[in-house]
Length: 381
Ligand code: GLA
Image 1 (cartoon, rainbow, N blue to C red):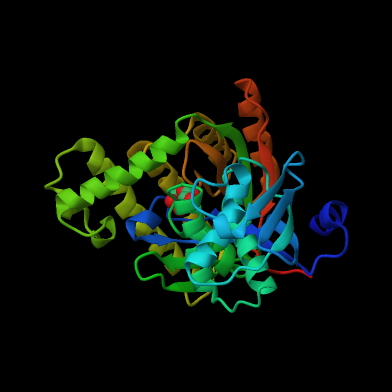
Image 2 (cartoon, helix red, strand yellow):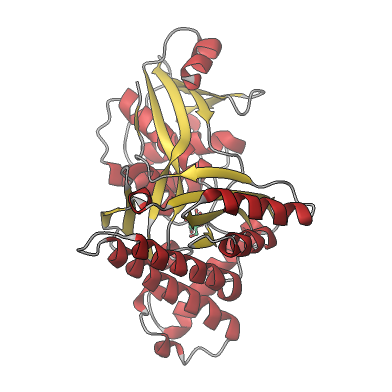
């Protein structure tokens, strides 16, 4: 275990434990979480591992195999948003949010390692938070239910690291189960496990890292949130979740806001359609995954044309994958860079076609990852 060996190199001695929190992909429901809507993510086999030990004193010492130049010392009694920046803001933010919630965080040494591709939009920051949350609560003997850890990890991201995301990524990392996608109602925060095993019907999941990350991305995410809030305000509803019928948006005259709303309403519907398909009493069949594939490609068009968060490499990857026989494909995550999720029956022709289209445009070669719905965050040793 590489986190444990990093711990020994940096701190000497053995860690008290090793914890893993996975990254996530999202089957359906994009930009719906902060609109109180539905999402359907699943955990990946890849994630962030932390080897950690308790120690005397009121400090955290943080190091990471991916940031070899940095060993960061954090004073637990002087934590406040803005005091720690860079990658260490995420683990330090978790310590801060735990203390804000009334928990006594112990002094500790933590060594992190990751096998998530960097910048691929697979929620490495949420994984970093969730791994830290499990390690610190375990080392401190704190009994904090998973649902509360989700809220704490999200506070670390929103208020300490200052990134205005919704609640999907932390929920996925902490609450997912192997062989299932997680249906999360972001209004009630109710969750349920939905069996999701494409391999049983001879289908599979391929993630394509488009290796693109466009400038502007952060501002655009906040702008989409603001547009959705503005649309809800003009419609006189608490959030876009209250809408189920697009006919109810007739009073909204602004064409941009109308498109944003159409995406959110239809994507919420697509989440429920996918769940109904996966839960069909007869059990999922090849037809189930053909239908889910169709919904994926439809969702991509909605993200591209109505929500306008897609990017050229994602559009090319989706088109090439579908032309090469994929059941369906779409961009995942916040947009403007990151990964595309493809539902396939055969991966080889899809990989070849996407690589060829990227090469034709002189783009950096895409990265491929075979994905399967994996277990959520857990103690490894
Ligand atoms: C990012 C955010 C999530 C969610 C997605 C879009 O991944 O972290 O909260 O809003 O974008 O669905």
